[in-house]
Amino acid sequence: MKKITIGEAARQSGVKVPTVRYYESIGLLMAPSRSEGNQRSFEPADISRLAFIRHARELGFEIDAIRTLLTLQDDPHQSCASADAIAKARLIEVEQRIRSLMALKAELEIMVEGCGHGRVDQCRVIEVLADHGQCTHPHH
Amino acid sequence: MKKITIGEAARQSGVKVPTVRYYESIGLLMAPSRSEGNQRSFEPADISRLAFIRHARELGFEIDAIRTLLTLQDDPHQSCASADAIAKARLIEVEQRIRSLMALKAELEIMVEGCGHGRVDQCRVIEVLADHGQCTHPHH
DNA sequence: CTACATCCTCTAGCGACTAGAGGTGCAAGA
DNA sequence: TCTTGCACCTCTAGTCGCTAGAGGATGTAG
Image 1 (cartoon, helix red, strand yellow):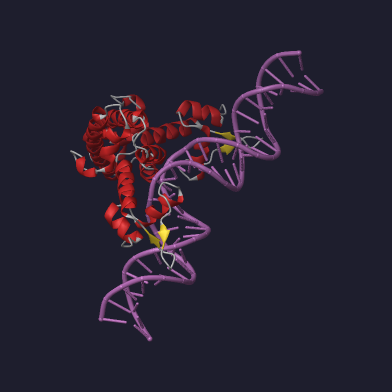
Image 2: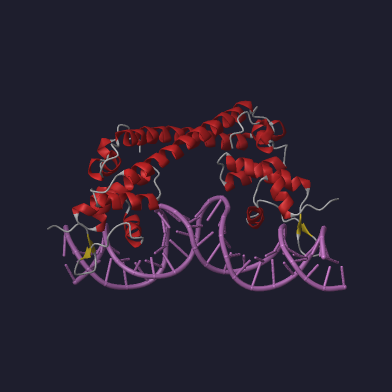
């Protein structure tokens, strides 16, 4: 079997080298075997696992959630109810975040549009920040 | 003049007590005068400043950006071009974040809808995570 | 054999707080 | 007046998910 270095694993999975080591250190990735000269030697399964982690991180799952998802993946006979619950919770988070950001966007637009590019004492950006009561959408 | 304790300042501004002290420690808030017994004694202007900071934080501005916005607020004769630029940059960030979250939302919905609530080996949540190629929107 | 890239471990730092230990101040009730 | 008990004080360390750097070992190509 060919030896996969940490650099190669990083390239193939899209996870950076120090991050791979970090994942190993927090037990998200099994410590791989080592070469004569103490260098990590990964297997194809490790690359898949890293890609899984990376994708889950991109979707905004927290490390602890990923830990659960990984143990589920490791045992395919389990019920996927936990995985479903984690994904649903994340979906709700994302939906809330989007709503909140939309409100912020509206408020920022008012600030930016109202700015007459003059002096600060006429600036709507500063003014709106100073007085929350002026927000059209007090969602936060 | 009445003395405003840190607890009162926190209540009125909506910033937590330890956070007020933190803001003082990083120089975002002038150190207030102290009472006989070494307790902080705030003035109404400090409350406004804290409310300003809190609002800006809620809008997602970073501490450094807020520092700039505060110096602008302190000198109303300056041009508000910087404030405008900061707000515009933040607006662009928020818009990008919304777009990205919409893509995530779509992907999470596919995962959750596809979940048959059976065993993990048929679970779309795990499957999609394991294979990024299945994403309909590879925006990330 | 000599560069040079890549690897190793270890520690410290990022942002923006938050938690906790261990101690002091102060107002109100007995 | 004393005591209870909350609010205050400083200081350090922890949170999350990495990232950067020091200082050294290994592996490969010319």
